[in-house]
Image: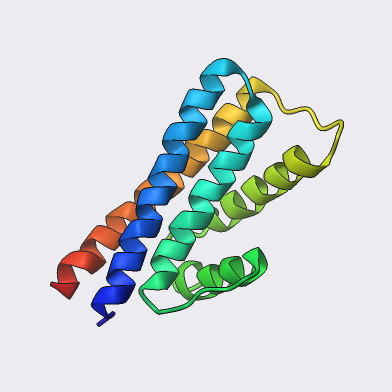
Length: 136
């Protein structure tokens, strides 16, 4: 059973993930597609960290968080296997959007990225709600 401190940290990180989804939706309306890609990725990153917080795990590197989440939660079928490719795609698009001067992302592509992020965060939220209720 995770400590109250870890549960609180998990809830905080889940709230951040949901806030990033809301931000991405608002930014999509003004057409800043690269920033939507960034916020979508960081929403799932925060969601993964929310899950891992219950174990008391964190990493200074994105790759560490992703590897641990895949190993413990996707490989063990806590979450669907397709989330692994969602993580990879969102990470690739975010890196290209942030660092490639000439990267162009279409409205359709970024809308799909946002939908994938919303689905991911929704699944994580369902999982965490069960974990939180078991902790009380």
